[in-house]
Image 1: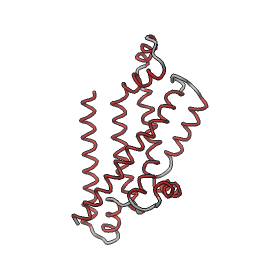
Image 2: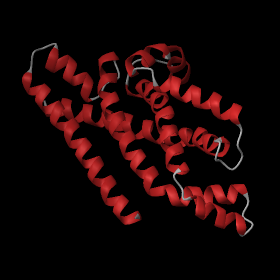
Image 3: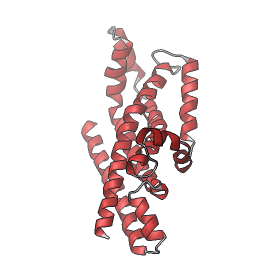
Image 4: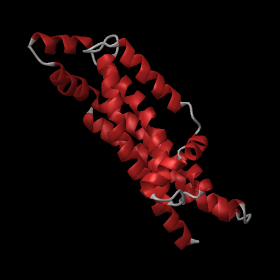
Length: 211
């Protein structure tokens, strides 16, 4: 059991790490656009904001298992296969991008308007305000969003195991459920719970340091 669980845990960590990294990098782009074009943004544009907001909400509404099936052609085009840990990273990232984009947008838009007006009075450009005011003031809130995203991806990675993604979820299904092994179910559940507790504890520690 130890060898099987350790290998699966490594696969889960791989999926979670790369999916979180890619989704944060890619999700930051629509978050910036939404922040800039919002009604109270630096460059309001109702059409751009409404269209992009609609797309974000639409993709957020897809259950992960359904989305994983829908984007099989994209997964095959990027990775070359639809089975395995690397293949699972694609749907995990696709599912996480709209979520983190909305979280980042909310974090950025909670910036104190008084600070923004003060920066304007000193002649700061829109991009300077975006990165030196919006971004700087929102770092703790964005960190909380990343921690929440990581925990969600941990749960999604377990579901990815049911469709050939590997990891702890795959072991729980193949050994725990299909072979009626309660030991595997218990161990897999404890590992996932442990991962969540570690991520949350680390996030809380970093948040306190930044605050």
